[in-house]
Each structure stands twice: as C-alpha cells, then as structure tokens.
Image 1 (cartoon, rainbow, N blue to C red):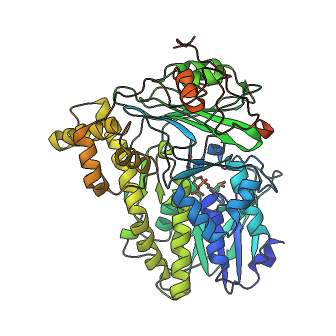
Image 2 (tube, rainbow, N blue to C red):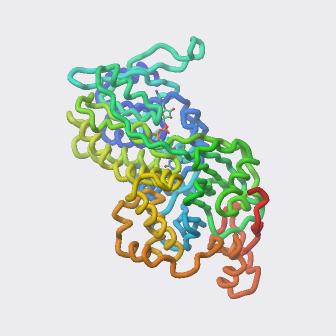
Image 3 (cartoon, helix red, strand yellow):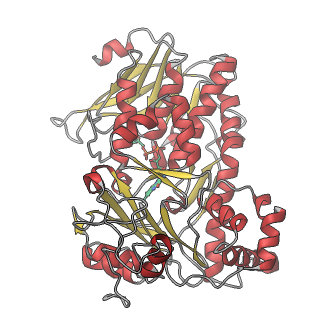
Length: 512
Ligand SMILES: Cc1cc2nc3c(=O)[nH]c(=O)nc-3n(C[C@H](O)[C@H](O)[C@H](O)COP(=O)(O)OP(=O)(O)OC[C@H]3O[C@@H](n4cnc5c(N)ncnc54)[C@H](O)[C@@H]3O)c2cc1C
C-alpha cells in the first residue's frame, strides 16, 4: 500500500508509532474499534522472527510474566498455544526452576506463577503475524514519525512521517502527513513525545527516575550433548553483599538464553571468557558449571544500566485528545525486573477496555492516560521498591531506620523461604512484581518470618541431576543407590522429572 492510500481520508483511522510489543498490542486493541490501523515503524518489519535494530534488547533473555501471558491471551486468543507450538517454554515457578533466592535455594513446589520463555524475536513475530492476518491493520515500515499534526481545540489530526531513502543525504525522504483520528506513541524509552508536545505548545511531562546499577551480558547456548536435567531454567538472584545475578532460560530450538547481570555498575562482559568468569563469580557455581559444558551459538551481547522512568502524562492538564503514549515510552522499568512486556500488555488492555466502554468519544485520551497510570502504579511501586532495596543493600545506612527495619524483615522472609511456603510464594510474587506491599504482612508470612527456616538450609540446589545434593536426592527419589534409568528428552530439550546425574558439577569452579 502506498502512503497516499494511507493518507486518503482518515475517517476511523488510527496510527500507532512503533511496531514492538507496546505498538503491536495497542494496534490489536484499536483494530477492534477503528476502521483502519496503520503501524508506522522506523525499522524494517520482517515476516517471521527476524532481528531488528529498533529492538536491540531482543538479543537478551526475555520472559513473559504470568500477568502478561493472561493479558496477551485476552488480546490474541490462542497466542499462547501458538507460541508453545513454535517452541516457547512455560517455566513453572518453582517446579521447573532451580532458584537461588537471597538466602538460599527455594524448594521445588507448585505455585500459580510461571514465566513464558522464548526469544523476543519469536514472540514479536507471532504477534505481528496475527496482526498481519487482520485486514484492518497495515504496517508502514522504514518510516520515521517526526511530528504530530495539531487540530482544533486540543486535538491531533495526524502524524508527519518520512520514509527511508538512501539516495538523499541523511537517508530520509521528505515529510508527508499521515492523517489520523487517533495517534498512539509506542516508540519505547527513546520516545520524543515530550518534544512533540512542546513543539505544539503543550507543557511536557515531569519525569520520575530511579537509577539502576545493573548491566547485562547475554549469549545463546546449545546444551551439552546428552544433557538431562530435572529443571528447565536456572535463576540465581542477587543477595545482600552479592549484587550480581544470573539466569538460564530455555528458548525455542532446544537452546538456552543465558544472561549474567552485574548489580554494582561494573561493565558487563563482552566475550565468552568474560561471561563464564562472571557466571563463576555468582553466589553458586551451578550456572558456571552448566555453561562450561555447553556450546556457545553466537556472540555475547551486552547492555548498560537503564533504571526506572515514569513520564507523568497523566498529570498534564492540557493535552491533545486522540493522542496517547504507551509502553516503555510512558513507564520504563529496569530490565532486571523483566516487566517491560507486562507494562505494554497492561496499556493495551486499558485501551481496549476504555474503547469498549466509551468508543472514541471526546475525553478518551484523558481517561486512558489516567487509567494507564492507575494500572501501572503497582508494578512501578514494586519495581522501584526493589531498586531502592538493592541500593540500600549496597549502602546499609541508606534510607533511615524504616528502610533498615524493612531490609531486616525482608532478610527474615528470604531466610524463611527455604522451608516456608508462604515466604517462598511471596518471594516468587515479588520476582514478578506481583506482590502488593501489604502481602509481606499476611499472617502466614509474618509467622514464617518470625519463626525462620524450620530446617537447616540446603547447601546446594534441590535437584537430582545437578549440584552437590545430586546423589542424595536421586537415592531418595528412586530408592536406589546410584544411576537410575536414563530418560532421553526429545529435541534435546531439558527433561523434567529425570533422575540422572549426567552432569557432575565441579566442587570448585575453574573460574571464580
Ligand atoms: C536486557 C533487557 C532484558 C529485558 N528482559 C525483559 C524480560 O525478561 N521481560 C520483559 O517483560 N521485558 C524485558 N525487557 C524490557 C522489554 O524489552 C521492553 O520493555 C519492551 O520491548 C518495550 O516495548 P515497547 O514497545 O514499549 O518499546 P521498544 O521495544 O523499545 O520498541 C520501540 C519501537 O518503536 C520504533 N520507533 C522508535 N522511534 C520511532 C519513530 N520515531 N518512528 C517510528 N518508529 C519508531 C523502534 O524501532 C521500535 O520498534 C528487557 C529489556 C532489556 C534491555
């Protein structure tokens, strides 16, 4: 479709700027109500799971929280099944995870939380395919949105875009107006909406920011030949005095996406020697030992700290109706908390609900801005609390007596989590930023915190296949002294429920 066709009339036409997760999910919500939706994307928009320069973070390990899974399924019914068919893996917490919490390994138990693990390229590709199948939705790739077109009485009537043109200096062609009745900015952290608003004479929003010291290094691996494990995923969280963390997530094709995060502002490793060294410096040698036998399938990608930023659009009194900002462009959370896609899905659900209730009547922009702020507030609070707690752990005097008391209570909950279900569940909820602040005061959690762990905390991971407890747990599970029958898993995927110790960890890692 040519640009002129897009420009044709503009009646019932929504333009979404940005074709990453916030833009794709917003386009889905809008397509239910508008005549047409055009998704403008500066980068190329591949068919299938192609890598995009516009989403560099896609190289890093991504998991979809339980809340985001539910929301995505509401927006795109059947999408979770399609993702699973394409190789995405549901990781149940903690049945499928060896999770080293702040004070020890968490027991393997049922909870109602899971993380959906796949490469980010695959997730975006399947969602894009769904939208492509909708005749109302069109992608306008290689087009950069540069400015809003103002209408009368605080409205916008379109977006100025310029197409990529390598023949001209700067690489972009002339500006053209894309007429629209509703415009959504989903351009991520680098969103220029504040400048666009200022150019139209509006007051730009105030930002709240909380800095982070966490940098990431990620690489994809093939598991060792014959790898058998009773887990699918590894997660080694930070702890007081140990700000680094590591994770191994299964992704499509039987591969592992592995990230190691510094938490002290240090530069992330940029090669495999450095990545292995960083894994060896974690609180437990498990990730290092597993990686030592795995085969790297590509380079190590790194990315620096980013932190939390909230652009308070909901506080602005004057605002162009029919304009909206969603996703990272409004609330960007520290990647260490794995919430960015949840934010995007929440924004789309709010838009969907308010369009269903009020249509595109005057005042929609105001309602949606307020409702998005309300919906994102708990996840922002939880993520910000976690960042401040991490800062406090590095500086024990930070935050005054209340903060110190809070940290001591959190430490007791973390210690109790090794044997107390209520405390372990709270830690899991906090990992997904799904716990209200009052959750820490539930009677069962308070009892667990006061009582502490009921038994000595296990020195190694609760696994019959990995770690120093391997032989003991295998004997307990099988009733036999050693080597229970081997169960191969199809496609080389980590097997669940096998009791075989094919991988023996080094008692002291080679690189520490
Ligand atoms: C290391 C790391 C790990 C992460 N892990 C997780 C995780 O496990 N779970 C999770 O939920 N989140 C995770 N995130 C966060 C997640 O990647 C982001 O929150 C999410 O991608 C934000 O989506 P978005 O659509 O708002 O913005 P983006 O993904 O940033 O997309 C913005 C899009 O807009 C386009 N664009 C920009 N400007 C223009 C313009 N002027 N005109 C046209 N198009 C434009 C860009 O090309 C891009 O396609 C992680 C992030 C990082 C950095």
